[in-house]
Amino acid sequence: MVNKIARMIATFFYVGEIPIAPGTVASFAGAMISIALSHNLALYLAVFAVLLVIGFLASERTEKIVGKHDPSCVVIDEVLGMMVALFLLPLTSKVLIIAFFLFRAFDMFKIYPANHLEKLRGGIGIIADDLLAGLYTNILMHVLIRTISI
Image (tube, rainbow, N blue to C red; front, top):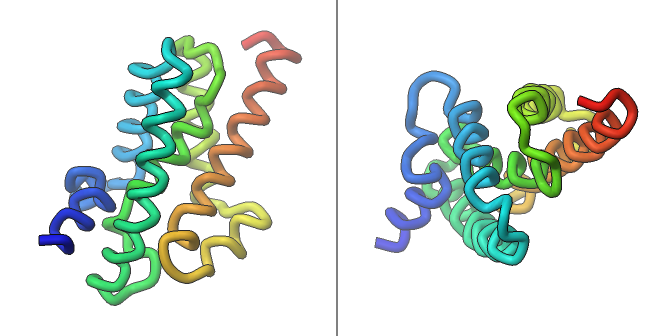
C-alpha cells in the first residue's frame, strides 16, 4: 500500500505514466497549481513545502521500486520546479509561456551545477536539479520583466 501511494505521488497522480512527454505535462500541472495559488502566498508556500517533503520521500521510494536512478515516470520534480519557476512572478499569459519554455529548456539541458545534482542518489538527486532549473528560470524571468518589460 505504501509503495502504491509513493508511486502515485511521485508520478503526480500517474501523469508520469503518460507515454509522450510526461515531464512537459507535469510542468503544465505545476503551472496550473501556481496559477491557482498565486493569490495566496501562505498557501502557495504551504502546498510547495508539503509537495517537496512528500515528493522527496515518494520519489526516493519509487526509484527503489523501479530499480532505476531517476526514472522517467517520476515527475513530481517537474511540478515542484515549475512552482519555483513561477514564484512571485506576474502570471500574465506572456510570462507563463516564456517561463514554461525556459523551465523546460533548463530542465533538459542541466546547466551547471544541475548536471551534478541529478547524479545524487535518491529523492534529492531526482528533485534538486529541477528546483535549480526553476530557480534559473525565476531569476531570468525577473530580470527580463525588469529590463524588457515582458
